[in-house]
Length: 218
Image (cartoon, rainbow, N blue to C red):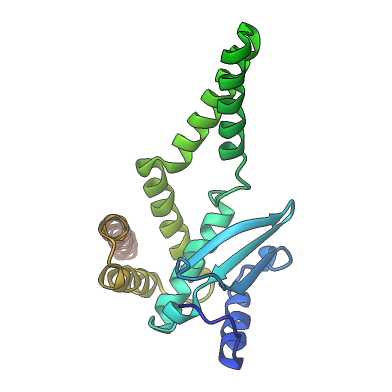
């Protein structure tokens, strides 16, 4: 169960994470402790038209090494930058209104209003499908992993260490996650990260060979 009290150590960690935000995000992205029961490890949500809050389950967070925390935090920052965090959901409300309207119009037999209600249901249902599409969310997560690596190098990590830290974090999450579906997502991200690391390594090697060949000419 998540503790509702915030200790001095919690405050220190939250301030540290706030310092890991890129300067352009620090004025409108908040970092807070998750206070609900059994929350996700880390998640972001809009709390206003121009503010985002990153919520951390600090109990689970403490099980991770410092470098692992950093890369997972930058993954969430990357999701914010990529505009792939959950927005204020109107779809469920619209779906409920549409279904209620459809049932009501069947009773009064108004064809036009029935069509409008069914159209509202269709739009809301499609948006919910898009939000929960597994392939799309996995693709967005992998893109955020790539951007997290770039953010880590911006904050002083070498490229190999950035990949190593994020890979280690994902391995730990695989080990700590009991739910098979969520665990498989971490495993897929880990495989994608390995492919990305291999490409980055090959690119660096090719650049070094090009430099060496150029120097040998002189």
